[in-house]
Length: 138
Image 1 (cartoon, rainbow, N blue to C red):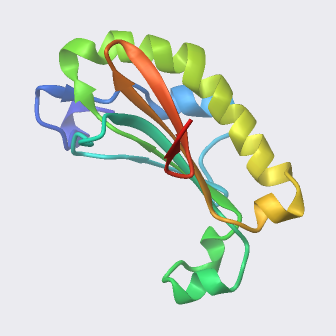
Image 2 (image 1 turned 90 degrees about the vertical axis):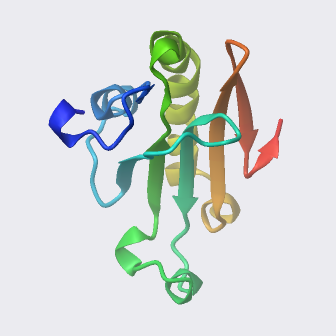
């Protein structure tokens, strides 16, 4: 993210770039893959989150337009600038391969899974990553 487009306070940095994510997934952002960068530190320590928006008509009533159906929403949260390098390394080694598998499952999984909302998130604490799926810690 260029400095002129920064929306973050100087003491925070994003641990991943859009290039990191696109390289890991083997694709570029599109209607089926939406990337965003959160501008506040998540209180639960989340640094990377992905959500699956299923292709069902009831989504529209929830305010989501049809072009978002069957899409993956990925959000990167900021970390303290001094921790950026450590968080980046662990995300690239552990979270991005898991994210790629999760995205593949979302797009090619069994019908029951694909027709339901799902999410996956990685929290960073004590120099370790913690994984939660569908807002449940595992």
